[in-house]
Length: 77
Image 1 (cartoon, helix red, strand yellow):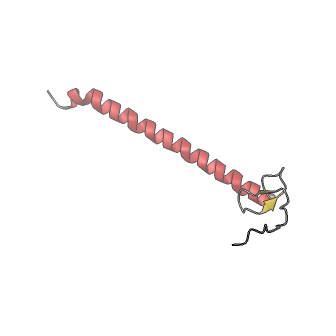
Image 2 (tube, rainbow, N blue to C red):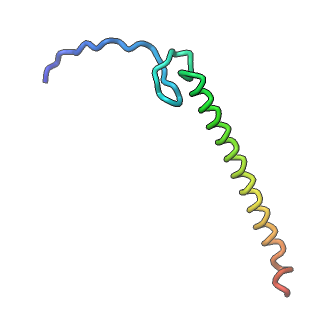
C-alpha cells in the first residue's frame, strides 16, 4: 500500500433537504416550497396519528378499569 495522501477537493459547506436530500445552503432546511409543504403535511399526519393513538389507548384503559370495577356486579353473585 502506498502511503501517499490523495488530495481531494474540499466540499462546499451544505446541508441536505429533509425530503429529497438535495444539497442546499447551510441556513436552509428545504430546497423548495413543495418539499416544505410535503414535510408540513407529514408532520400534521404524524401529530393526528399520535393524538388518535392516545385517545384509543385512553378508551381502552377506561374500559378495562370499568371491567375490573364492575366485575363483582356482573357475575351475579
